[in-house]
Image (cartoon, each protein chain N blue to C red):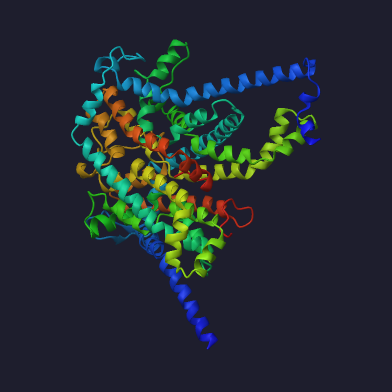
Length: 313
Length: 298
């Protein structure tokens, strides 16, 4: 008798789990697993959305890697953004985080002011920077020229477009500031006191007390920064559109990457191939490259030992 | 005894020693240095807002100049933006997408997060890892089949439904954030509810829900901002029908409609930014809590 109740109890608890998990189980199947498998399938098909898909073997793959003129520029830009934008954002975020922990007067006001730009909607923030940095009437170049500093072309110059995007990313550093602030406040005060007694300089205190304590958070910021770079879409697209002056209205056809492919990123290629060239097969190839890159860095985030997000409890 | 040790100043009243004076001067200099840096940083973070706002109030001719401050304050620019055909529709659509989407996300994500935080079952860690993976994936990875599904099979392109409906099936980021929050609720509360004869659903609604309010507030805020800011989603599904555009999507067409009129474009930009900033001021605490809880941006 007791085994029967145990079995039924178990079945009840399995049913209960399934019921609570059901929204996500359905969502996972319909909006993730099915389309992911489908993406793999379409990457081997020729499909333009009108005629039925036909098998094309590895043609889409060789097209994307060898002939599609946007792929390698986008990969190079992604690498640039990972190396320069992500690391500058982490360093700047840490600096601002340290600054806010040192500020004793008006802390709340400073914190809010530092945080607000992060909340600015990406399209609006990018429009704002496209105006601020525009070479014709933009306030930044007006001020630079008045100060006698040569003013760059920013979003209109291929060597300055990514630095301009970096500036925009540094402006919105509030998320990292909050994370670093919390981490810095968690560093045990005794360790600083002990270091001070030993006569450690400010740099030594940072190097041997602060940094070892917050290094997991620094790693976390770097890896999530890389993952976010894989999704970097709205800002480079809008910046290119506004600077090129081709906008007639949303929905206009626009060759992405202005100026000279310098703002191309991988997500833009999926849009360009799928929704501008109607080459769904090749769009799926880029989507899978994006998938592989994102998953590799997510795995880094979840590694069992020393992983940054602990899956278990 | 310890009290006295804590306050050595009281032990030795009278004029400050030379060492104490240099220490004080050093502290003051340090204060000045830190706060000057703070002011410099504050200028970097606020001046873009200030210049955008000032430009939004310039006359058409002045907006073509390099002036920084308006000669005449043209508040009518904002009226012109509101009078732009479609602008009010974009507001309505954005509120629908953000509002309905947020409600659906919270309702569908809470039970999943609860199960992941408090139930013991096989495959729980695997599920959690899949949730985190989904959270980290760019939406572009699955967009081709999803578009074909919504547009070709259900004929719903030109509407926002392809963006709203999936939110009824749990959102990875919200599940993760809520799960992190629910982990902090002690099991004793749940056990007590069980002893009182509450089923799982009653426990969730009567015990967990009230305690999880700050977490739910954070999730709702993030989701609201996500929908408000989303550009890629409306671009894929709504672009063909201006009647379904959202603010973030419609905003860029301002630059097209008003070619060189930066003043009107900046006024529209202010109007898209302002609600987000207002919401933040009212819910600052919940927001910051959410950021530190997950360490991931929304």
